[in-house]
Amino acid sequence: MVIYGIYYASALLAGALATGYLLSWPWSIPFVILAAFCLWFFRDPDRDIPAGRVAVSPADGKVVAVQPAPNGLTRMSIFLNVFDVHVNRTPIGGTIERVQYQPGEFLVASREEATARNEQNFVTVNGGDTTVTFSQIAGLIARRIIFYKKPGDQVAAGERIGLIKFGSRVDVFFGPEWAIAVKPGERVKAGSSIIARRV
Image (tube, rainbow, N blue to C red):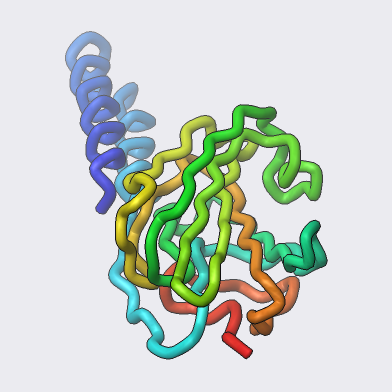
């Protein structure tokens, strides 16, 4: 479980105790429900990481777009709803080459405009003979992007690298050396779903 869930749940349970003491226990029920939701929302299950020359999904969610992007790249967009696991993982192993935060708006993350206009964090991973960039994009509710790594860090494919609090989107940019293995409408899981293969 991500520690943020414990923080939020602890604060809500403190509110439940205070409300129950000052008023009566039925008034504390909403706080208890919200605390349970936070613990569930920030869950962090283990995943079996596939081996081989593949890229794994950086997020749980639904593939909402696979389309050409500038410079001969292909962009894959994954939308995370409030019921998805929100821990993000790196698509490939290698070295964190670049991390660039971009301030922006908080449009609904499933909208196409979110790719260019929303607050986001770009991360480039250099795998030696290939480079993959992905972006953690904040949504309408999500207002906080967490990233654990820094440039120069070594990461393994499927390794946990951060999360986006409360709803979001992740875009992944692949070069022509990758064959996309999923299509719009499919659901994927971070770290365990293969989303592209080397050609």
